[in-house]
Structures are given as structure tokens and as C-alpha cells.
Amino acid sequence: MVLKRADWTWYRPGMPLRIAIFGQAPFGRDVTTRLAAAGHEIVGVHVPPDGGGRPDPLAAEAEEQGWPLFRYKGYRRKGEAIAERVEEYLALGADLNVLPFTTVILPPEIVDAPRHRSVCFHPSLLPAFRGGAALAWQIMEGASESGISIFQPDEGVDTGPLYRQVGGVRIEPTDTMASLYFDKLYPMGVEGMVDVVAEIDAGTARLEAQRSEGASFQGLVDDAAARIDWAQDVTRLDRHIRACDPGPGAWAELAGETIRLFGCRIESTEGGVDAPGTVVGIDESGLALAVEGGVLRIKKVRGSAGKVVASESGLKPGDRFQ
Image (cartoon, rainbow, N blue to C red; front, side, top):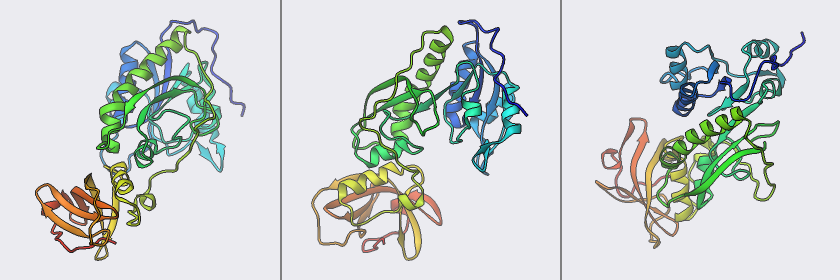
């Protein structure tokens, strides 16, 4: 089988684009609906299969709008593109792939196929914090500024040339992964993606290679990375817990049970006599937790009984997390 790019001969700048979406979640939905409202034709929406929780908002929107919907875990098998999925994709005749929020690694047979190739959103100032957990690592590593990058994917991980960057977003000492994303970067990202697609359509978009200085890559924040290390000091533990809030939730063990901590702030930077991980107080404002060099205040916890405010968790002074 010979797989070819779609026929581009009919296209003229300024015409509505035929767009294939690869994404998920509310961000993917909001970018897609804005592109459709701008007059572009959504020729296909690719969303990973549901994981057993709530239906994906982008997939639900595609079904409601009647956009062709595809639900695949991946597009490669043993490192090679799955030919039948590439062929199915090419039949859509897309002018541009838009990747507003995707965790799927696409093969070049798809990424590079359209006339305008692909455009992807990333919630950091590339080349720093490449990888699928940029939001968490920015907080965890103590970055003071964030922003968005919109780029053309290549064969690397978040290494492609940039269409646009917008910085100047301060990461506050109280920010969680959720507040940094939803309150600050999400609205910027939706507007940025829509604007860049408009520039691509008009023929005015320009690409600039990413610089090499300051490049970094971080892995996913899974349960192993989210575990609390009580040897860390109060500042790093505060950042660690906020970076994992709301998911996966920084965690420690108490009497053999996994307990996840949320709503963290530094209460004191004066160390006491209690061992790190010891509950030293609990009231309506949360539990006070002794750590190296200070005390953290934790608003909510989640254990086997679910997520509750700390004052209703049954924890008591003297309990010690491991």
C-alpha cells in the first residue's frame, strides 16, 4: 500500500481550513468549537478512549455536532505507523492538524501529511519543561514565570519550531497545578491556538526554531514521582504538594494506608522538635504538619474513604506519615 498526502491543488489562502483535531478534555473542546465558529470545517476528531470515568468533553461535543469521531489508544504498533489508521486519516483530506491537548504520540505519516502540517499547544515557555507534565514540574522546580508555546511538532518531544510564545505569567507561591492551568494558561492557550490557526490560514504565520539554551525535559508525574520525601525541606515539600494538586495527589503512608494531601500552604518556616511528617495540630483550617524547617498547613486529604476536609478525616495530633 502506498500512502500519499491529500491533494492540495485546490487550496487558496484565506479559504476555511479542513481541520483534523487530535485532543481531549475541556481545552480540546473549547479550541475545536472556536475553530468551527470561525468557519473552519472539522473533518475528524481523534480522542483517546474513555478510561471508565466521565465521558470526554471533546468526544461528547463531536458526537453532538456530528463531527467524525475516532477513539484510538495509539497510531503506532511496534514503533511503526498503523497503516490502516494512517489511510483512514488521509481520507479526511485535512489541510491542518490541530493538537490542542493530546497525550498520543502521532507518527510523521500523520503529523506531516497536511498542507500546513500540524500545530500543537504546550503549557510552558519552551524549550524549558518539555514533556507531558510541564504544569506540575514548573511548580515543583520553583519556576517564577510561566506562559504558553504554540509550535509545529517534529519527531522530538516538544522540540519543533515555534509559531508563538506568550510569557509573563507569574507563578504565585500559592498556585497549584490546577490554578496555574485553569486560571491563567487555559484562556491564553485557547485564544493563542485560534489566532495561530487564523494566521496559518491567512498565510502570515511564521516559524522560529526553538533555542537550545535552557532546554529541559521532565517525565510524567506518576505515583512514584508524587510520593512525599520527608527529607525535603518546607519549601520543596510545599511546592511538591501544590504541583501534584489535583492529580495525582502527593501522598504518604499512615498505618499502611495511602493518604493524599491537597490545599497546601506554608504556615511556618521555623522548625520544631517533632519529626517530619508528624501531625502537630488540626482544626477547621486544616491539619498542621511538621516538616524539615517548618510547618505546612493541609486543607484536604484523600484516603480509602474519599476526599474530605482534614478536620473530618479522623487524623489527630501525634499521627506520623511515612
